[in-house]
Structures are given as C-alpha cells and as structure tokens.
Length: 362
Image (tube, rainbow, N blue to C red; front, side, top):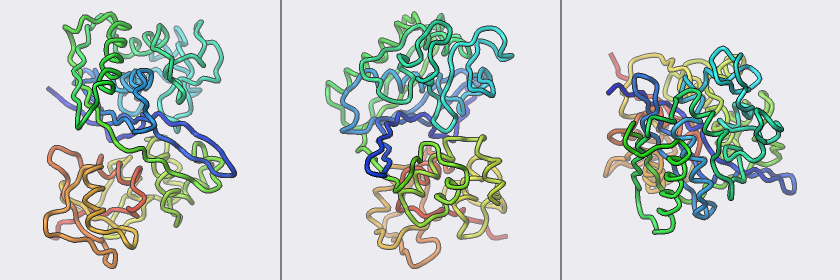
C-alpha cells in the first residue's frame, strides 16, 4: 500500500490562560504522524494524552480521534481543499455549495471557531472540535458533515484499531474505547470496512510559560521571528511550534525574515524550520542521523530521555558535550522519520538550541 507520512504536529488541543502578564499553554493531548493511502484516505495517526491534564475525558479522546481521521489540514490535502481564504469550510472544493463551518486561524491548528456563531444551523461554540474546553461535549451532525465532505467516512464502515503504547489504567483505556465507539456510531460504522490504526500513549504534561507573550497564541510575525532566534529557551520552543503548526502558511514570513535551506554544522533555527517545511536542503547527508546543539549543562542522560520522547537514540558509550558544535550526533530510531523527529525536538524540547544534518564528504 502506498503510504504518505506527514511532517507535522498541528493537531493539538491547548488551553491558554493569561495571569499576571504571563501566558501559559497547557497541552492536554496532541495528534501527529498521520498516514494516508494512494486515494488520500487516512490510514493511521498517533495521539499522546498528557497527564495529569487529561482526566480520562472521553470528550478529549473524541476530539483527538477526529483530528486523527480527518481534522488535519496540513496532513490531508483533501481536507485542506475545502477551506477558503476566510477559513470557511465547504462541502465542495469550489467553495460554492454549502458552508459547513468556520475554522480558526491556521496557527491555532485545525479547529472549528467557537466565536463564529451559527453556521449551517450549528452553534460553533458547542462543537467538540473547538480548540479547548471540550469536556462534556460530543461529536454530532456538524462534525459528521465535515469529515464526510473530504473523505465520505459515513458508509465506509471504518475499522478503528487502537494500539495502546505503554501502561494504561482500565479507566484510561475505557475513555479511549468509548470515544472510538462514539465516533463509529456517528459515522454509522459496523467496523467491517476501511482500516485505521490509532496509536495512543501517555506522557507527562509539557506545560511551558512565555514571558510577556500576550500572546504566543497569535503573536505578530516580527515578534514570532524574534522569539525563534531569541535567548529564552521556552519562548523559542513555543514560537518554533507555532511556525511549524502553520505549515506552508509560514514560508513567506520565513523568507521575508531571511530564512533559507539549512546548511553547515551550526544552522540557524529559522533555517532548520524552513527546510522542515519546504523540504529544501543543500549538500549530501545521511537520513538516519543528525547533530544536536544543546543548552549548557544538558547531560548525556537528559539527551537519552529526550530521545525516548522524540524518536532518536544516543549510542551506548557515546556522550554529548555542550562545549562542542554539534554537542553530539544521534541516530534516528528504527521506523521513525528524521524530519519528524526534528519537528518534535524544535516544538517540545527547550534544551535543544538547533540541529544540523550529518553531511557526507565527497
């Protein structure tokens, strides 16, 4: 089967809170690593639920499952084709028949805009695909229409196979299984048709704070670029995640800021992000290994922990030194994609300053 893997981490359920001049982003769950077949139909995705913020809510699980099978504009061209320049989502690619929903700005991921009022008879504020606060909500007719427009899921009898990675309590498993059953019921599926594998795992909540970010949810382009190149590791990480979530929409802004294909052994973070989004690189390089540039004081043990979270291995007996550039080279875990690993690193790991390609001399 033809398989396309998307370099993206765009589908993230986030709650933003502003207190005493600080903005924090508490990630409840995130979905990534989508695949699709040659017809563009989703075939798999992975979701991480972050504890303790995820309180075994079936609403959150349904939200992420809908991200996995449809709501991911940068992952699925068929979904993206229904979105016009105003972020309205239509039943057809020409955007002329039925307006089904209004989506949030691309920087906020693929979500229904809760402030858009009533569209096509549905109150947007009550959609389970709003960006936050979905406990107690459930997928309903509007969500069914949106996922059917690009993929015609109703009638395909989707067979959702859940792969539980790591240790799960019976209550946590039940919340996920209940979400699967609810989505199958919504789509009228008896589970005998198109297969979809949903890999789910648990992790500690990666709460981060951005000083004075009024907000990192939608900063100006200039502030965003300055944050990516700035000295505050947490702000730099949030800003990088924002750019990577924007996908192709971020490229013009990157170019205007002087970004180009990454090169050399100490590329700027902006250039790395540009290469991740465009696929443009220079020189010959290995695709199963790359270099890490780390904050002072980052130990080899910490690097191994980062690798466990993001998909690389620091070889036994190898060490990292923050006094050298790069600090060390690591190997991409078997079955993982190097560019996806880099995306996770820049989006979630403040200890990583930048990365470089492992060039082949010739």
